[in-house]
Amino acid sequence: MKKKKILFLGETYRADAITWMNGLREFGDFEIITWELKTPSNSNLNRILRIFEFLFAIFKIKKISRLQKPDMIIAERTTSYGFLAALSGVKPVAIAQQGRTDLWPEKSFSFHLKKMIQKYAFQKADLIHAWGPVMTVSMKERNVAMKKVLVLSKGIDLKKFKNINSANPSKINAVVTRSLLPEYRHDTILKAFSLLNEEGTDFSLTIIGDGNQLTNLKDLARNLNIEKKVNFTGRIANTELPKILQASNFYISMPITEGVSASLFEAMACNCFPIVTDIAGNRSWIQHRKNGQLIPIDDYEKLASELIWSFENKDFREEAVVKNRKFVEKNADYNINMKIISERYHELINTTKN
Image (cartoon, rainbow, N blue to C red):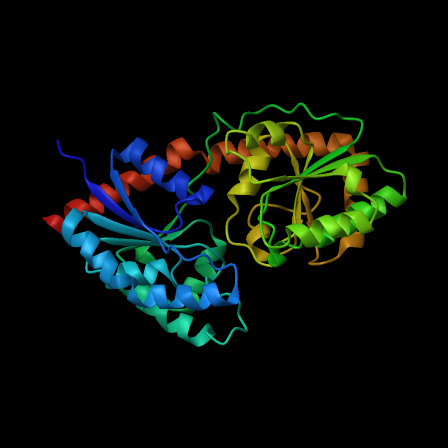
């Protein structure tokens, strides 16, 4: 039988996108065709050029559709690629809301335009992915037809992110796996570890990833006199990530906004104790001093004190990581979730074509 084709619109280098596409190939036997914007958004000029590329993108997408004849189109982000998918003319359409609302930043001059674009994408979509419950809040506020919404994470590969941990128990071995962008507040994390250093608490801090804040963060670590205890790895192969997580006993993430974090699930699977910001996206999974810690945004003093408290309360941490592993196995197993998503796509295709 000929494989069904899916046209994927999104940034194919992102780990989330790779997981999505690989899962569809593995569990749905789909052939995946991809298209993405080529202009990076790393400067003001490039951001302007990227807008022009976006404006003319629909013509390229329609040309690909005529040549490849995909059976379905899927896209990440309701305010960009999701909008293009809705315009493409390909049916059925599945779009994924990536953030809590996708309307970010909320005070930008383009906010109202994004709101209109998102409304159109929601109306035209046959299936809308909410990777977690927090995403449905904004959908309901915008009167989305919730019967079209699938609330389910893509999950993580529990065969890769194994239930083992080899961290040195005598000190804090912390890992951060978020992109080095301002909204992830790595500076808050560095300031907290500076306080730990001043108090004589032993630690190592591994910061994985790349982004426009790399130079600033390295300078900050140097100014705080903790550069010898902080390892900036840069971008690493996804195959290396489980090893680093398994060698860590704390996972830290301090974003100011959050949808559903696969990074958090990966850390929970590898028995890292999670300390994250007290925002809606994290409260879906973490309860303060139950299975992790919740820290107010930008409060590096609170982060430092909760790190010390949780490190000193070893029995509490050990009980929490066991709970977290069981939670991930039940709710975020890639082998289960991606099979469900693949089956839903086949149903949509069969319904649309018949």
